[in-house]
Length: 116
Image (tube, helix red, strand yellow):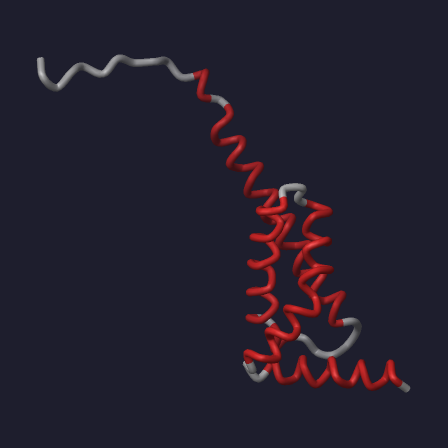
């Protein structure tokens, strides 16, 4: 009986958050942030980057909350957004790494002094 009540409470919080109730959104964040940080840390070892990714993902969760259809696990839906955001972050990091890797292939050029 208690599990059913907890499920109904979560459903009510989700519905309130879908109506842009900031207290409900905060309650969802507080409930799921510890687990979702762990999910992000599975992909991103640096704590600060993982926290940034988690924050970005929660923004996506709240922006897209109206699309959640109450079918399946809400936690699973949130987790999927976290994983996708973490993978996007890693792809972006890889692009930046490739963009800065090959500086030694360029010829060094001396720049003339402006005072001469």
